[in-house]
Amino acid sequence: MTEAMTAPPLPDRATLTRLTEPQPLRDALADAVQRGLTGPDKWLEPIFFYDARGSELFDRITELDEYYLTRTEASILARHGDALVAAVGPDELVEIGSGSSSKTPVLLDALRASGGTCYVPLDISESALVEAAERLTTERDWLTVEAYVADFHRDLAAVPRNGRRVVAFLGSTLGNLVPHERKGLLADIRTMLAPGDGFLLGVDLVKGEDVLLPAYDDAQGVTAEFNRNVLHVINRELDGDLPVDAFEHRVGWNHDLECVDLELVATRDIAARLRAIDLDLSFESGESILTEHSCKFRLPDLTQELAQAGLCAAQIATDPEERFAVVLALPADLA
Figure 1 (cartoon, helix red, strand yellow):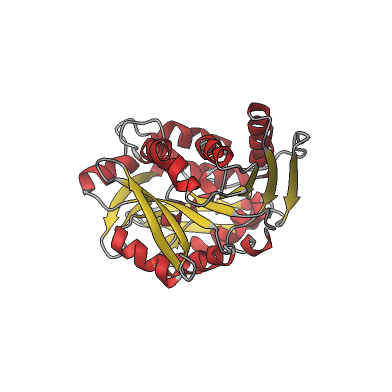
Figure 2 (figure 1 turned 90 degrees about the vertical axis):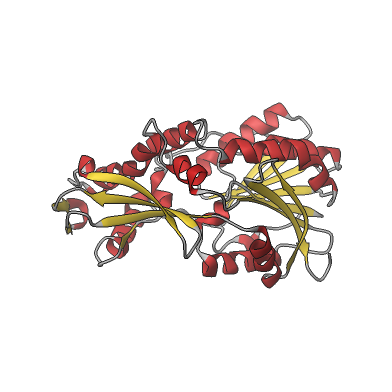
């Protein structure tokens, strides 16, 4: 997760603006550990999964048979992306939490078919934005990229517009937020939309635990390794001695929030020290660390959440098994 000291130069048809100066990983992690691992209910934010090793492991997860989310969303976009984007006819595509922009090409092709030429990725990782800008402008000589280093929890209103826009938030990233957090984010996204704009949202749907739980607890143990990797990050960045192998990966269905919870469970009593911040940590056998909520959605409830934020679900596209959905929402007073 640590950024390179210098990023590669941007191509001619790309710009990069910093709306947020990323907090150094060590400082952010120290704050998170102090807040999350020193009380009776222990938790960590999932952003700390994604150092270089964690990102590599997540790429492997997306290719596993059990992990249907990535390929299912991609198939929906391949079948319906043109129509969803054409319904707005945008000049620009704004992608929140764009990362490596791996799902973006199909939407960029739809953007061009609608006469648009500008891609606006927003992400906290400057290196990911630069790499994506270089790749996408090389592949598409018609495209301009205006990238923003941004925290989507606070910077959305600061993104200038280039005409009519589609704002995309894919990968069911919305599901990493609990309901009150989603309410605030959706309200912020609504402020980005003017008459004629649209919001493209990808969400994972509620389904049987026999499908949901294996997606986060695969037979090869890749997700378990990914989950435990956050402990390696803590040890490396904060000079710690947490015994990583003494924590077990556990996945469960949270009926109240309708989400999959990822936890790390201590298999014995543990005493550890983080020397960089002079902090002692202790865990009793069986004590858990919540590392991720992955909330799932029912379409009527999602439609209501969107309506509460001033958004109207105008079109909904799903796969044949209705495992995943991509929703085109419009400002409710303009739909």
